[in-house]
Length: 289
Image (cartoon, rainbow, N blue to C red; front, side, top):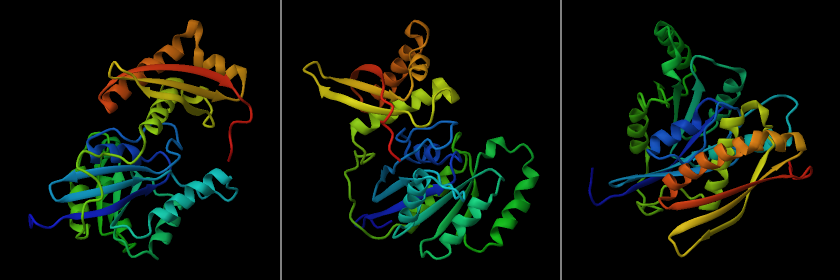
């Protein structure tokens, strides 16, 4: 590597919902930036992660999972538009799929990719869950015949298996360019946004299907006090009183667990003491498609 040259570019991570895109980006960064959940449609907006190593800077874009159902809501249309915009003018595209599960949505995605100039890596994720590894070679052959992928890499975003190969390829595809961000920067997302996402992740993790996808978290107050700590007030908006009761739990046990775990993640992320206070409010008209 020429020590006097710098390399910088954008890498998009795309794919269907719940295939492990956010887990992969966190593993690529070595930091938890994007929230994860077993629940589909976890990511709603672009999440930008910045990885800097020596002369290389990779700016990863974690996009919401796409869904090409015929009767799409405006929410899904928005997510699909995110994907369409994220595959233009990038140095590399990483298409993530769920093991050996190849779907019509995956076919639609690669049809869109045929028209793009950016190279595409296919990451066959959840390798750790494929018990019979003998099925991999025929599946890779099936995918190779589509003649669109620069590389096909079986990975486990959860364990980190083979993720280093993706980093190596991404570095080779970066153009000569000055770094856009300082080496200390790991995301362009604001701390306020990250705080709301962390709370939303804990809601999904500790409540599962009890809580509807439409639930929204707002940060009402985010201030730094004189004691070198953050005071964060979060509001969880729900449509019905029954949902409010679920989040609060018996004698407030659920909301305490959610708050405690969210606070711990925020302190790890922000590297500062956090005082987190959560309220649950009923607001039937909060959700806009």
